[in-house]
Amino acid sequence: MSKFIAKPVRKLLCKLKIPGDKSISHRSIMLGSLANGITEIRGFLQGEDSLATLKAFQKMGVNIKQDSDKIIIQGVGLHGLKQPNSPLDLGNSGTSMRLMSGILAAQSFDSELIGDISLSKRPMSRVIDPLTDMGAVIESNDGKLPLKIKGSHPLKGINYNLPVASAQVKSCILLAGLYAQGETCVSQPKTTRDHTERMLKGLGYSVRVMNNKICLSGDGGLRAAKIQVPSDISSAAFFMVAACIAPQSDIILKDININPTRTGVIDILQLMGAKLTLINEREISGELLADIRVQSSQLRGIHIPVELVPLAIDEFPAIFIAASCAQGETILTGAKELRVKESDRIQVMADGLDILGIENEVSEDGIKIQGGIFQKPSNIIESHHDHRISMSFAVASLRCEYTIEINGVDNVKTSFPNFVELANFAGMNIVEV
Ligand code: S3P
Image (tube, rainbow, N blue to C red; front, side):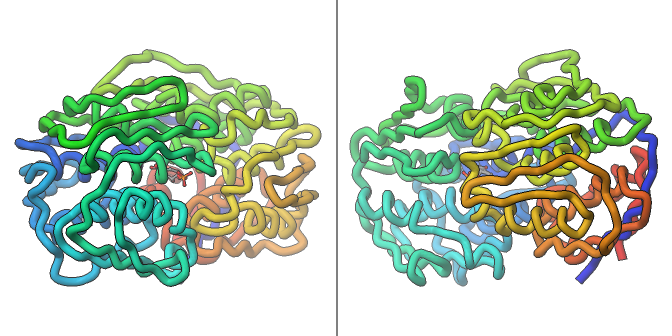
């Protein structure tokens, strides 16, 4: 089990190129494999999660060549996947698991999906239930992994109201809907990331979006295209918070995806008083990009608007560090989903903040954090093998007066394999041992 040893520094000055967006990288492999023709991807995230998706499609007979962040896929069409000869191991990746179950439920062959200890604890009924309504046959361990998906059960379209605002569940149903007879519609209680809808449209599939209701009909086809993956705003978020809280900083984050369904972290930090500006906004491969300048900022506590929660769902561990350095209290509500991520991110962050002497109070669906200074009751943080917890506490080191240690950081490579290298390039002092 590896750990970070992070020493305090005060100054961050740099221009950074953050690796590719994880959500878009997953979808580019899935849809590129199901398209007709050759898909060329640039900027692919070489993290363990998106590579788990890549390997799973290779195991299903798709010819995928990788040369660092360049990928070439010989698409097999919607009906060209082959039965894998062993269970598909999707590691730590909830996105692979939930989206692929939608695709696999519609195939003519049986398949089995497994994952690591964390993924094996996460709820899968949220995809099993709607897929079963569509006609799929899936065995699970009481709503958890492994999923045994039976082939040759034709699907029919459904009209589904998502009980939770989840892009993974929405995407699972839409991907199953590509194969279903008739129309499939998904209504979401709040806006969630729309990369699936955008990429389907980019590959020539007709998707009808009416506010928070998304519909498509089965039996179309996908046309291969070139896909440029922008830099991941969820990874960039660690550096946004880092630059805000380090007393002398001025950084630029290049080519960041600013899809409006992902920019909650920008809105929240700006509401807290962050000096954060977008430069050079542009559109590439159907996604919006910008460079983001962030300078040292005196942050203040806020009540986080509840409609921003799904738009910043992966960034809360980093936002909690910003709240710890803000003047006054920050209140988060309506974020129960954080409890079923790679770890229970409300409790695990609260435990880490306790260790650093930051007053906080957890509730079922959120947390209150009283901004303060990191003191030293102890300096050892447990990340519970959650990549985003590990990176968030590494960022907290910027405002500590002492070295901190973060245990169990191995999974940082699921989403941000060169985090330590970039953090040190930016001026931080982190060693992985
Ligand atoms: C993702 C959706 C979100 C997010 C995850 C990636 C996606 O999950 O937390 O990291 O790519 O669709 P939920 O849909 O479960 O909120």
